[in-house]
Image (cartoon, rainbow, N blue to C red; front, side):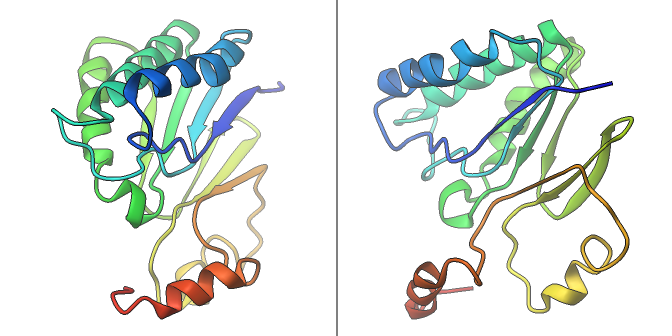
Length: 181
């Protein structure tokens, strides 16, 4: 069976005024996905732009986005996966999303997962996905050996972060940061 899904990344909630963000998400994201009955939605990192506070810029955008997304997912039996983005943007804020989703999860049939470290899953029969959030590791071959350096095959690979081999300018700038992890 063919599956249809949507993958969105770099939303950066908190970077612009809430009302503008909500309007843009409606126009660019929700109007488009509402044309379909999606099997899955993946947010592939950097949902946030900076730290969000309950009484600050971005919280209204986050709340409206999550509620609309959960309603869409519940109404369409759509699976939701959210990948941790770069630490400089997402920080440790997926816990807020988890809290918002838990309210709906307990009262609705919502299939969701928050992805904090490299993970693979068979999302559906014959649809295997590898999720690769940005993680700060010393030995990539050792860390990813069970996922990348074997005979595993994936239908979709979704990740977020800096790829050193293809983003040399970003890596050079990161290496200049005295506070790098």
